Length: 101
Image 1: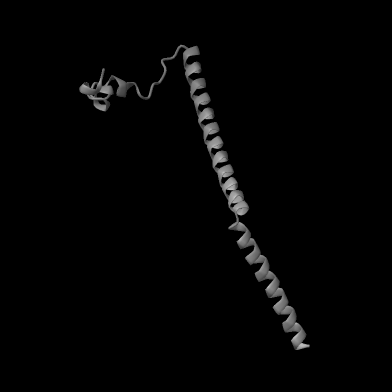
Image 2: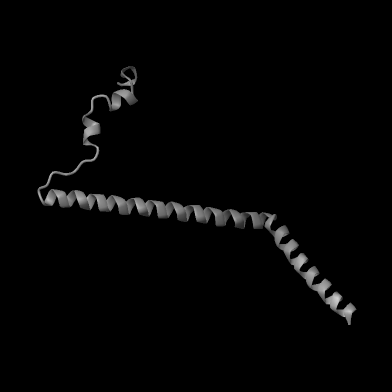
């Protein structure tokens, strides 16, 4: 009876090892590599789509804020106005005089 038990355990372990080895070998075939790459590329594309959608939502919200301020006749709160008016900041520091047209 013990021999039959150990034979069953050996067969079960052998099946598990063979199946795992087959999956691993399949992942290194051209088809397996192509499948892995397509899954990775699909995830990258989905992440990029999500990022673009988040940017669009943010842009739409900001545009709505600007339109609301304009509709109410309020001065728009421009966060960057002081930076643009500062003569030390601007195109001159980024592009020195000799590189400007």
